[in-house]
Length: 339
Image (cartoon, rainbow, N blue to C red):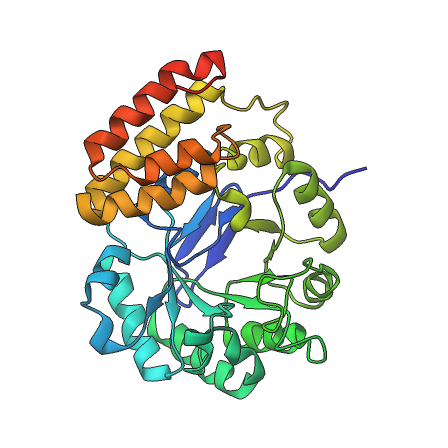
């Protein structure tokens, strides 16, 4: 017997400001992936929460080109959630207030990124080894904004120090509204299999809603993870690469809404075409054509594209050339053969 159907979650901030996550199925904040075009696409397919790519709290980086492209605005779908990266309480507080002024309704702190360039600055998952620092950061964030504050973390620094429960208790005491836990340690990076025992331990020990994250790529796996952990929701990271309609399948399964039929191959090409148009609009032509190549690589398996087709797309230098390529493959997709 599977887990009971997921129920919407209401988060409350310090001053009673509320955010409703319905359904409690989230797109993880991922640098270089969860940009505005992809967030909106996943939200349209049924994700109840989509979170920005991590934003540095460093004041000198607030107005960089990268930061401006990652910023939230009032056109983003609610609830608008911004993830911050930093290790200085004052800088994080200022960055949180800045994000709220731009329209953020939920602030998330990154304790999950294992990238070397992040950890060497004592940020991201490196903070899992510094619980006292985490406590100061969370106190500062909760005091800085009225909206709910959440935390995305890993299970610990390494297999010998799975301290997620300690960090979760600190978060609960600080007044956080939600946790999401990737079932790997910092040392694991993205290697090996995610484990869910630690997530289950945290769920049993705190009153906060916990989202389980790690290796969830299909409804069956999501159901199994929820049954094992008792989590209030799930967070999808790399499982969404090349299949944003996964959120519709998860919603149907986990909210017990009946059978879900995946989009036809033609419909999938049409989704890609729409997303790529949004990418050109968001980034401009020069950067946009490079970003679409990355996404097409993720879609390749789903769309039955071989290496030759991918190589051909990657050689195209203008959005119009990419549009024409997609149009040919879309037209031929009902035949399930190369254009």
